[in-house]
Length: 216
Length: 251
Image 1 (spheres, rainbow over the protein chains, first blue to last red):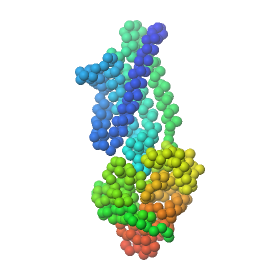
Image 2: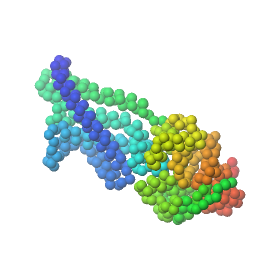
Image 3: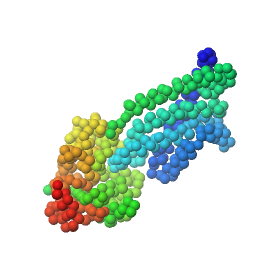
């Protein structure tokens, strides 16, 4: 256990890096995912097509491929960035957005079709129907699955450790290499700090689920 | 029964056709509804009467013919369609109140967001409408806290808040418990007396007798009869209508 206590500042540092990666990617993914979901239900066929292809491609390929694209292919295409963190955020947010789009879309579909019909029949346009009537109701049913996706995002961010980004898992690997005799405690420490992020999210999910349930 | 004098054609359907796959749900429908007229559409289920009602504000698309409202042909999509819909009030069988908004917000949302009415005015008008349909004291509640009859009256108030030229009712009492039907019909009868142009799809023959200027009988996607209530109920001409009415009276 000493190895954890001795390296607490390192763990803490990694924890904060992971928190940062997850939070930034999470916010971008939420925005992008909601836009993709809106495109998926829009009356414009081209938008629907784009969104469908995006979601199916990203959702059905491994995260590592997204990372390779962001870290290796994008720079060759002329997209330069100073730090690998940027590549990690691009990969994590574009990948997670696909899952968020699917969750939001299923939430949109869970709102009875009569709600949209009533909104349209008082003269609302597509944007108003979506923003004022459908999404506020959809988001309530979508919050629990969204939090599950965010939990997966926190864990997925460890892949960044393999792409030269020092976050919790990256530091953990360094520590394990440096302390060959104490690999198990080192990894337990890493797991503990991941739980520190994901368990509160899980608790939040069940609290929100109880609070925002909508009566029909 | 009615005291107002109907004017020019406000809603006009010309040779309207629609299919659901193989099923021909609307066959060459021609119907003119003048300003101030109350037209009740009746017929057996599956006769196309709900589809007809929903086609008038383009919740259902049509494949042939034209529908025009106050001289303007119903646009395909987009801004013009939204504008035209604002002039056509719609009341649904299943109320469709916005589940996440209070009763007051349900009524003010259209005027605020679609017409840009200031909030104070919208609130005041909405309260007046809610009082008029008898649910003023329910204003801060959510739809799920109200009975079906109350919800449907709020839905009528929501449609009226847009100051529509015509009101469409798609089986407004079919989802209600029997004891709540009259409270909704009373509001509708009052509305008819005040001269609102109304197209009402219903199974309530009492309402048709009391408030309708015309009864339109539909069967198999066609308008079979178009007559005054008196004429239709006492002397139906077609066999389909006779058959339909006889089935109603056996119980």
